[in-house]
Length: 460
Figure 1: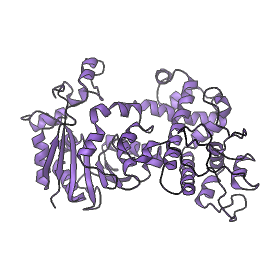
Figure 2: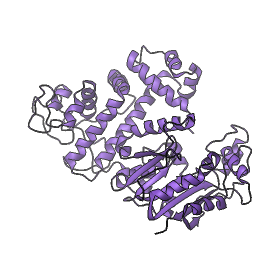
Figure 3: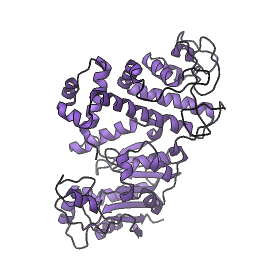
Figure 4: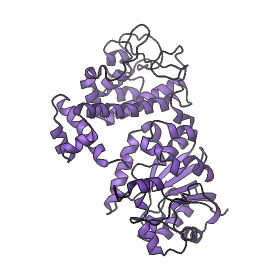
């Protein structure tokens, strides 16, 4: 699992670099601001230079995701490019420390990254710099909100001033030229090879670059917005087979319950449902006195802002009965899905009320999908809660008490190597590995937990 100190170090370093400049900034200043020792910083980043490059790389990867997702949407090309500009501008506006760092240190990146793409006539591409400078000067969001707005004189002009997608010469006095200080802003896209470092023959052609927009589950799994750690868990969590078993389709209304701080399944479901469906993330309560809940909710919201082109349609609701019971408008959901949460509700004494919330949200004929760590039958409820492993009979009984009928069971997420009997319960196994280095290789060899996969239906 990602160490939260790494993210905190990056955020603080970004702020220090923006305020003091990379060359003047000291690692000890970053350490103090992040609340860690200098040694901890060097544990994650071998040098200050590596820290800066990581900041740039991770932010640019996010911007790339935004651009590619918008380019691959099915709306008309001009609207596609306008959405792209708005989304990138919004990201830069929300991450001004990064914008400042990139502008201040751009000259220092020569040789560390591939040279900027140029048009055949040698003109430097203007899209990125135009967006950065426009955001920094406070112009861009205003002109994008109304394409006819003229930022310099406050009057309405005669057309779209910010042309970032077509190969046209700009007339003097347009917003593009003013933002770019006289250089023709003409980015390049290669529609033939799928690479973003080449020239496109057609101003209206669409680059086949970001597979998420195809909304095929297999493509979403390999998309760059998912981290290497998330992708490494696919072999244990079987997302395509699991969602297929639950009958999830891209035009459905789907609720994911308690997705956690980062939302492993959210990263798959939100892009898949973004254009034709509706996705609810039923999160922890916002006013809980349990710090884990409030911290996870805050991190989840922050994570969504990193990829606005993918997560801008996510609707956050809350679940913690009796105060929070409406995970979606009553009778509107096609699917309600929960992954590895039942033990938490049993511990809190909320299982019956939670399943009642699921039943209320679903349409007649709607499906409740449950994946949970599986305990051997006969284990007491106290032992189940302590270990994190629940019996199938307990889960089925709770669902049926709420009014559901068991439709089908699957062994998609079974792991016969897992005995469900470990010193620290299910958290002994990856990804938690709560025992640290103690018998680490043994538990890594077992893999993630044995899990039940149950499909329930709300009667018509």
